[in-house]
Image (cartoon, rainbow, N blue to C red):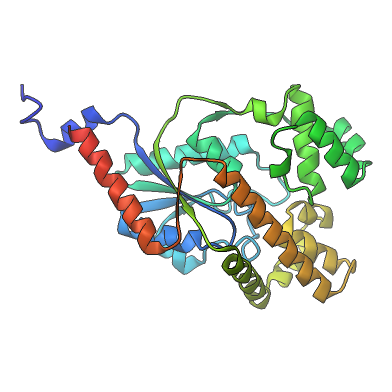
Amino acid sequence: MPTTATRPQSQRLQRGEIKPPLVAIVGPTATGKSEIAIDLAEEFNGEIVSADSRQVYRGMDIGTGKVLPDQQGRVPHHLLDVADPNDTYTVVQYKDAAIAAIQDIQQRGLLPFLVGGTGLYIQAVIDNLLIPPVPPQPKLRAELDKLSKEDLVKRLKLVEPVDWATIDLQNPRRIIRAIEVSETAGIPISEMRRKGPQLFDTLIVGIDRPKKTLDERIERRMMERFKRGFIEEVRTLHSEGVSWERLETMGLEYRRIAEYLQGKYPYEQAVELCKQDLIQFAKRQYTWFRSNRKVDWVDSDDEAQRLVSDWLVKRTEGRVR
C-alpha cells in the first residue's frame, strides 16, 4: 500500500480536504458582479449559481439585470427563470435548489460561483441556515394589509428588533412577510437563522465601488434598461396575468414603473424615484455585506482573479501537507 509520500496527488488531496470549494461573488447592485463572475468562471473552469431573489422569475429580465443569452453561452448559469412571477419563491426553496446546483457542479469537477446581491440567499447557502418554512397566513395578511407603511414598520421593529433595518422598508409586501414569518414562528427572523454544519469551504469576494462611482453606475445602468425596453417588459408581464399589486411587491424599478403605468405619477418622477430607490437599496446591501467580516473586498477584475487564484493555491497546499 502506497505511503503518503508516494500516493498519487489526487488521492492525497481527497484525504486532506473535507469541504469542497465554493466562491461567492457579492456586493451591491451595479458594482459589476455578473461581469466579473463570468470572467472568473471562464478563468477557473467554473459555473455560476445566481443568488438574486428576482432573477428566479421568468419574464423579469431587463429590470433584474439578468445576464444576456451570449453571456450565458460563455458560462452556464443556474437558478435563473425557475419560478412563475405569480408564485412566491421562498428562501427555503432557494437554499435547497442552490445547494443541489452547487453540489452538481462540484461533482462534475468544476468550481461553483455563487453570485448575487441578495444577502439572505447568500447566507442561507454559505452558513447552511436552518430556516423553518412558514407558509402564507391569509388571515394575518388581511389584517396587516389594512395598516399604513409607518404602522407596519413599527410592528416590524417589535417582532424583529435586530434585522429590521435590512428589510426593504419601501416595500410593504416585504415588511408584511417579515412580520408574518416572525409572528407565526413566535421568534424574530434573526433568531431563526441558526447555522447548520457548513457544507462548503467558501471564499467570499465583495465587489466594492466608491459611492460617487456607484451612484453614477446605478443611474447609467438604469437609463440603459429603459432604452432596452424595460417599461414594455413591465407592461407585458401585466398583460400576461401578473397583477399591478404583484409587480409592486417586486420592488425597486418594477414597483415604480408599475405605478407609473397606472398613472400614479409622470414618467420623469418615476425615473427619479427609481434612481433614489436603487441608491438606497445599494446602501442596505452594503450594510448587510459589510457586517460579514469574512468578505474580502476588491475593486477590480484583476484583483478578484488574484484573490481567487491565491485562495485555490493555498487550499491545494493545505490539502497536500
